Amino acid sequence: MKAIRWPIGQLILLLNVIFSPRSPKRAVSEQAKLDEQTKSLSLYQLPSCPFCVKVRRTMKREGLKIELRNISGNNDFSEELVREGGKRKVPCLRIEKEDGQVQWLYESSDVVSHLQGLTKAA
Image (cartoon, rainbow, N blue to C red; front, side):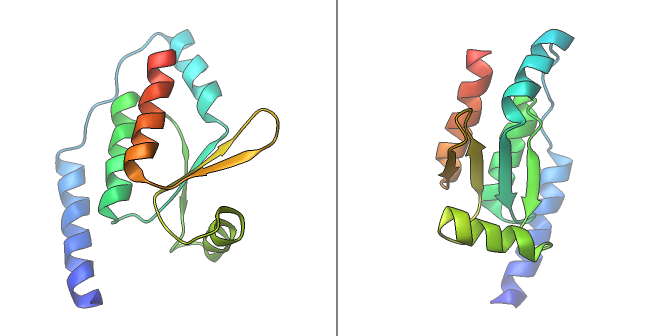
């Protein structure tokens, strides 16, 4: 299975680079407000996962700065995802709320909707 996944993953990464979306141009104050909202977010992901690419493209298209946590490159992130989130599935958006509670959002479409909601609210 790795013999199939690796070349497909590399193709996905190449196409993502070639057809990368543009970030929107915003006023500095507006971007600073969005950056403040996203500082409590982390995206657990794998670089060549097509669903993770979908979320990262949305982040770029919406101009959002979110910490990326590669679970294959760092075993601590993988263990944290399983320990706190409950399962080793990516993409997963970790949302730390103001009251200290943490929400784990697993489905790529749900993550995309959440991120688009942040930019619409701003």
